[in-house]
Length: 620
Image 1 (spheres, rainbow, N blue to C red):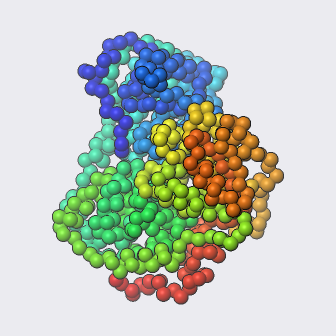
Image 2 (cartoon, one colour; image 1 turned 135 degrees about the vertical axis):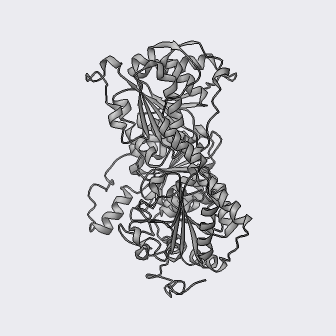
Image 3 (tube, rainbow, N blue to C red; image 1 turned 60 degrees about the vertical axis):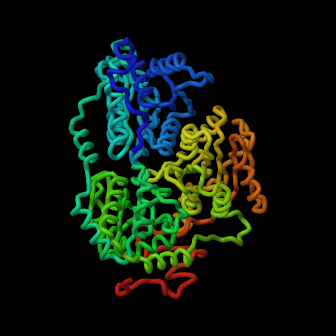
């Protein structure tokens, strides 16, 4: 993982020995950890820490008048959590948010669980009532340890004021180490007001955890295991890299690309792994899974050796594990989390360790041993799949197709934008039709699928990358969840671009209702809702706020939208009946994938000569 800033050794900390209250110690540790942006909403139980941030900034004001520790106020605490997540996902650093007790803290449960599910490092500091009032149902009291215990990587409740420093430092250590995740620090108000000596050093004694992390850091592929891996690769004719978000979390994108090119192995990625390899790379087959490209899924059907790296065979990829990659004679798995090995799919070779380090060791061993294997016929085969079954949609429909919007946007951004999304059809269209040249450009709620994620995540990413083009691709259902954060965009004059694909429904729910519930659109039809999103954007101060309903106006509007200098909002009214295809139905195999009317299929539609299908006896 990329760390924020090296800790200052205790013997050199200029403030060691000074008297501080607990809140000031919290803020000083944040500064020592390199935190430059904190997202949060104030309240009574956290006011001492907010005051400490204010006073810290007064003392350390930049020459240009800017605050060394930006304090960003959202419309809702959930927004603060997702802003911190967007910051963390786009940088690899630990995101931080700061909220009050009771409802302030409970409003962050969803982002905490979202970060846990997608392995995102954040530290949430929640105010708590004074220790003497805990357990009395005091005003704005909530049992955060109990509530967050099953949602976070770890929860700390500080009951000894002397532990404030060590707890805060340890929270960052736990959040960023191993498999990253969210850590919650519950901070009673009287602990914030307590005054003591700042030591400038110290961590909590979490010996067992540190021993496990040290084992991971020391984990090295032995010569025997490297040789075993290359024996499997040498016996393979059709190897395939199956790559997940763990490659991005470990900053292993370069190592992955080097491995793929060193040995000529094509790559499919999960929705969380997009950007791990440049999606325009000749070896990239883009996304696999429920809504993966047809050619990626067919490659999975045809491969004989799956090499899983930082991926977990989840239900959106392997709904039935026994049907996933049915022709694969062997499965290898590299992951930082031992619990993922063999959890869903049995493997023949595995290594628990950092993805980047592991891939680099394999490359070094393979080159040193002079490994050679000609996968040329296999590469020609997968290129043929890509040419024969490309992504496509109803290009002749007079209504604006959402795929067309994303295709045009991709032509403008050329794979260089940071893109966040809400959750639903628009999320999958964006995943299918946008390119990403680098890791950490694609920010989406993968495992939890949290509607309302896109806009606050874009805000967090824009604060982390003030000069980058940041676009939130959203849906009318998702954006309503955190619509108040549109005002946050203009409050801070962020050049965030909000592209709203409005189909007047919960599109993915509607698609499932059409396929599996005989067109009974229960609660998914939003056509009677009266929200005027353009007026809402204008009322929040967006100087660029437009609605497009005519297909002929789309290209010019998108170009103006992307090139606008400040915050921009573009609503595109799209076909409510547009479906996301390909689609692998729940519990089905890739062989049963539905490609729709406009993407070729091996079993349905054109082309259908099946000349590209491999049989068990066809070996390269």
